[in-house]
Image 1 (cartoon, rainbow, N blue to C red):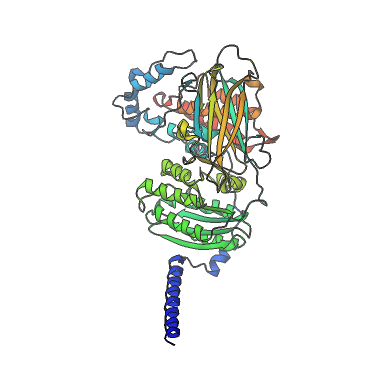
Image 2 (image 1 turned 120 degrees about the vertical axis):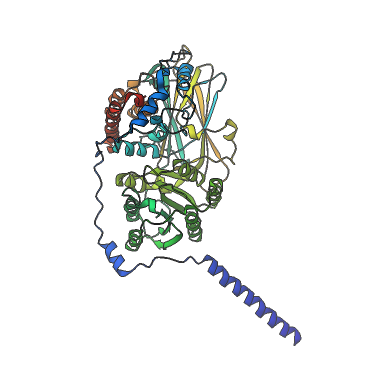
Length: 577
C-alpha cells in the first residue's frame, strides 16, 4: 500500500514537472505577433494594382554639384607628380612606374587615390604573377552582382562611381551567358575559351566558365522564407522601404501553396508582422508588407536573431530555408561586434538556414557589412536600385537566389611555366584564398545557386611558340552539397587557343567588354589601350543570348555611353580614367 502511494505521488510530481517544463518550453518558443491584420487591410491589399516597371534606360541628366574646395584639394593632391609612367617588363603596362607615380601624389598618405576615385577602403587590384614563382592561383567563386547595380544607380544620379564600387567579377557575373550545363548528378560544369586581349596585343584572355544545374519552379523544393526588413528612419527614402515593399510583392506573386513566408521588422525593436504563412495566402502576406513604415533606430542584429528563430521553428527538411534581409546596411545597435554577428550567422548556416541580403539606397549602403554577412550566411547579396532589378533578383533568378546547389565553392588554377610566363586574375580581389585553403573544408567560400553562371577571366602572357591544343594549365573546383560537410573535386585541363579576339564567341566578347569598362572606371594600371568607344564597339555586336535580344545587355550599352559622357564633363583632375 505504501509502495502504491509512493508511486502515485512520484508519478504526480514527475508529470507536474514535465507539464511545467512543457508549458515553459511552449512559452519560450511562442513568438508574439505585433501586427493585427484587419479586414480593411486585406481588402486594400486585394485591390492593389499591378506593378508598373520603370523604363530600363531612363536616367537623370543632372550632374551632381561639387564644391570648389573639393576640386581644389584634388588638384593639390595630384600636383605635377601626375606624370606619365614608363613601361616595364615588356607586358605593355606601366607596372612599377605607374604604381610609383600614384604613390608620389598621395602626399600625406590619407588617400590611396584622389577623392573622386574613392575612399581609403579601396581594394588594390590583383597584380601580374610570374608563373615560375607562383604557379597557383586560388580564390572563392561568387555570384554576387551588387557592383553593377551600384554603377547603374550612380550613373542615374549623374555621377561616375567611386573606384571602390567597381568589383569587376560582380559586373561580369551580372549578365547571363549560354554556358553548357552539367550532366548527370553533377551540380557544376566548367568550360574554357581563350583569345587575344582587346586592350593589350601582347597577352591572351583565358575565360573559365562555370554553369550550375537548372531547377524549374515546378521542381523547386518547398520554401520556408523569412522576410527580415529594416524599418528604421533611414529607410523612409523612395528608393528604400517603398522599393522593398514592391520588390517583396513580386516574390509573393511567385509563391506556391507549399511555400511559407514570415515577416519580421526591426527598428527601435524587432517584431513579427506575420507568422509563417502559406504562399497561397497572398493577400494576407501583402497586407502585412503594406503595413510596414519607416521609423526609429536600427536594431539589425536583434531582428536577425528573431528571424532565424522563426526560420528554425518552421524548418523544412530537404527544403529551402532562408532569411531574406532587406536593409540599407545601417546597423547601429544590438550585437555591436561585427565578428560576433558574423559568427552568429555562420553558426545558423550550419543548421541549414541560409541568408540572402538585398541592399537598398546608395548613400547609406554598408557594402562591407552586407558582403560579410551574406558570405557567412552561405548566401548571396544584391543591390536593388529599381523595381526592374527587384524583379530580376527575386523573380527571373528566383531559383538561383533561393536555392543553393553547391556551397563553399573554391577554384584553384595551376599554370604550367613551360608555356605561360605570367598571369593576372581579373577581379575577385575580395575573394582570394591562400593556396592551402583549397583543400581545407573548414575554410568558408562562396555559394552557387540553381541556374547561375560564374565567369572568371585571367590575362595570361604566353612563352614563344606555344602550339594549339597544348595543355597550359589545370583548373580544380571544390564544392560541398548544400547540407554536406565534405567537399568534392572537379578537375579539368586547359588547352591553348591562339585565336583572334574577333573569332571568340559572342559571350566571350561581351564579357570581355564588361571587364574593359570595369578597368577603365577603376583607373586600372592594366587598362592598356581600352577606351569607352572600344567597349561600345565590342558590346554592340553581342546583345543576344541564345538567339534572343537581352534587355540587360542593351542597357549596358546605355551605361557605357553615360559613363563616357560623365567622364568628359568632369574636371580633368577627377577624370583619371
